[in-house]
Image (tube, rainbow, N blue to C red; front, side, top):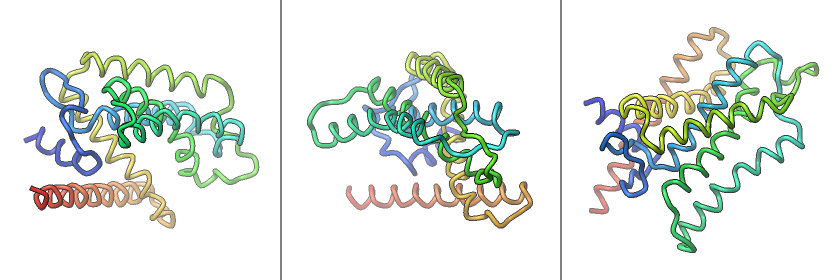
Length: 213
């Protein structure tokens, strides 16, 4: 039952092709290798930023840093587009690495905006020194290696990925409730909308697949 729930939410964002997914303890993860990498990257950077930046007045990265971070989006774009156009055949390790690179960069642009103080003049850029970049990058690389070699238990890893999917969509939808001052109510509304939206996408995916059969 737990596995069915995990795959239900995974279906909302992923094609779930077994050949393009990683296997842990003989089980297929709920999302493909590329999506697994994306959420590993997101997790690593979010954890770092929340631990070390949540009490600091931060804003989005500087232009120079932003351009550098955008370079991390390029590998997945090339790999995904090249694979889609049949220019070359991708592999799961390439999907995992390019996805991790892509996901690693995203929170640097979203996390600062969650703070009501992000636009204050005295706010400092979220990336202040090299550690702010390389610590999350190192963490995401280590996690990607552990995931690829199946070191982490299946249910722990799959549950973590789906939880991250829900949380990430919740963070994105939290902007809809920017007028809500109660933090607990805002979180509840954001997560509720996230779960509802993902459930809708999953059911839509199932319906479209059933029509094509």
